[in-house]
Image (cartoon, rainbow, N blue to C red; front, side):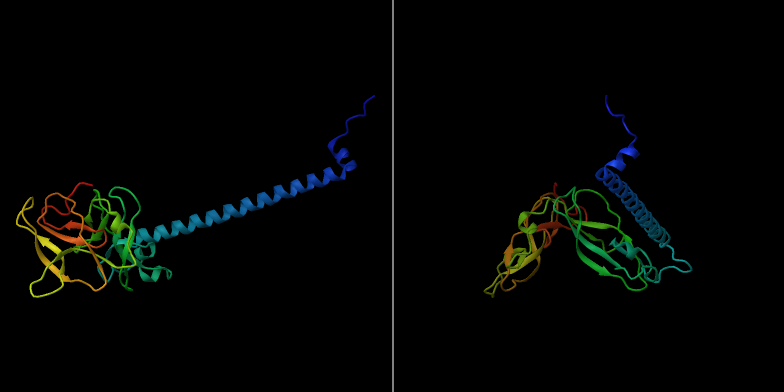
Length: 245
């Protein structure tokens, strides 16, 4: 005749190993619950802090009691730059005014130039006017991004810096001099045709490599060699940086 099946409590008393396993399992469950509670508390605190910073930023456009003493600095500001210095908690207050990315319609922007803010200055996000762009700078008028290059950055410029410094421009002979100059600005009378004339040149830096900028095509009457991308950037009033992406 088979032995009667004992309740779990009775069987575990006769099996110390099983009892230890059950106790260990219960301890692990308690530990897991404690970890979950701590994680939830940390997550809640992070949400509260993020919300507090967001509220500060939302109200920073009109500081309590007074308006900013200086005009806002436009570009891509750090979160602390959106706040007055007294409310930034010592965090970096800088605004990026020069950005590049490899492709014209996708990818993250990389900052190439930062502006540190003074005590009475506040950063503001510049307006993106849209369209393909791989190199943009904040316009002199402020408030908007001005696209300098709209085509993909050529591989020659994408892999800078090199061991030998690289400058983009068009080498031109100079009467009476043994060394040519580097032309970095050119103009022509028509947006669509005609020979380019150098209107801005400099002496060739010693030890530098000079490369011809890529012509993106399209209508243009005034262009500047973009040293960030290696492309002729059109700065004509009517056809700024023309060229298909």
